[in-house]
Image 1 (spheres, rainbow, N blue to C red):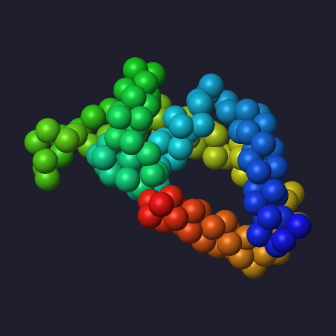
Image 2: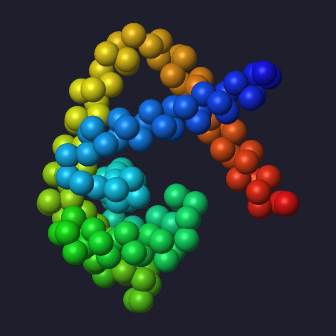
Length: 144
């Protein structure tokens, strides 16, 4: 097995492990896409559906359906967008902030033993390698 094959195999295995982990920290019955949108908004603040879609590499329609579901649950709200009359900005509500904070706090508490064990430089290097691989695959998919 080559180094890149080993990396990809470990990513696949980690993906399956992360799915189980996500189920354990999911204190509010969020699906992974809903959690990703809430976290994006908690980091970046109010923004438009097209911007979330661009940053997440998915369709605007996909993000719009997630935002609609989150709004129905009271976790997001639409705000006027001074830059564009028809494209509202999506913002977290107080409940949305509380939900994503609870999920992230639970994740951090469960991951604390790993963080204490793993050298920070190793984690940074691993994240960089995975990000580089993702960028390469995204670029390769677009040009083929």
